[in-house]
Length: 113
Image 1 (tube, rainbow, N blue to C red):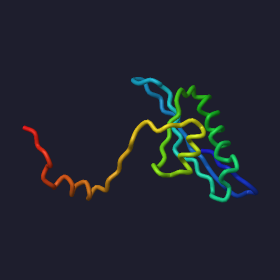
Image 2 (spheres, rainbow, N blue to C red):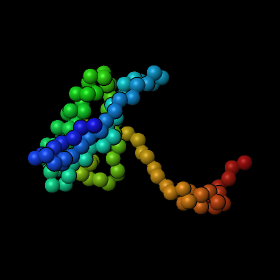
Image 3 (cartoon, rainbow, N blue to C red):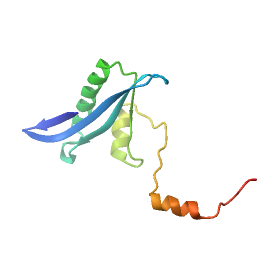
Image 4 (cartoon, helix red, strand yellow):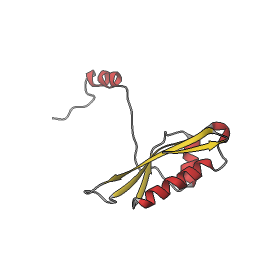
């Protein structure tokens, strides 16, 4: 966990961790869980500095790949991570449990036998 402070006030933070895998490659994955900068301090290089510091930690752990998540349509996140070279590689989909159960109760559109 890293914290950005200005005049004794927290203005942002970042959290990352390392996963070690033995059955897949790359074996050492850095996961950036969150980078948050207060709105009035954005676009001043603070997020980039926090990511650079996380990368120093990742380097010390022999990380081979870095992964992260952000919400589709979050243009600010898409722009920030895109400038650093990140590209989406998978889709994550969400649905409320009750909505899923409702869908499962409906007759199947097409059943193969």
